[in-house]
Length: 249
Ligand code: NAD
Image: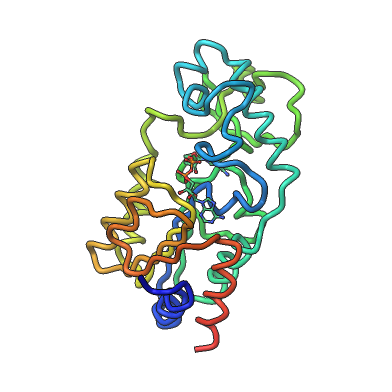
């Protein structure tokens, strides 16, 4: 197996020559900001598993419980700061001619780091969506004064504006993500376990279309099967080194 240093060097060569770059990020990129991944340590909240709360069934059974969990997560996100990996992703966007970030994260840290060309594939915990009229609205206050929050247009109860387990993706967002990733020179995948199958599919389709996939994750994952370069390290340490070397070339 190539050493970490060799892997970063190889990835830097690809990145330095790329005019069109995509990044696909998952919960791992925010773990160094102190936001727990669902499946890692700290994944339990009041004895509930995320998989049992982030579902339409959980919401119809007990909307207040689901909202209390989201409000707890919003509190964690509000206290957290973007880390070096978020900052580098925003720097790459400014430096390359064509760029798109597709994130599975709902925490808003990429935006706070300065990313703008971004698709939030799984939505955002900083928005609510009315269950009556489907109006989307920002939720900036933590904690929320009423649970569930009420729609400012029609007064109906809102749900978090996120994609839950078992729900479909927005087809337009999926289509746009897929098209950009497939036509990219390089796709940097960061902190994605592959337990959610759609992001793996997006990355694999891009690799099949000739995009060079670079995978940054301390653990092997289904992405490792088709990644051209595997960098087995933490995003906050790897991305600054990778970008510095790419810029020096
Ligand atoms: P995930 O499936 O994306 O798994 C996290 C991955 O990150 C794992 O493979 C782990 O090895 C890797 N990882 C951990 N620390 C890392 C680091 N420092 N650098 C690079 N990689 C690292 O996430 P999940 O927790 O299984 O969640 C599934 C779904 O829920 C996804 O949509 C996810 O984005 C979402 N979620 C979002 C947040 C958030 O917005 N921050 C938090 C939890 C879950």
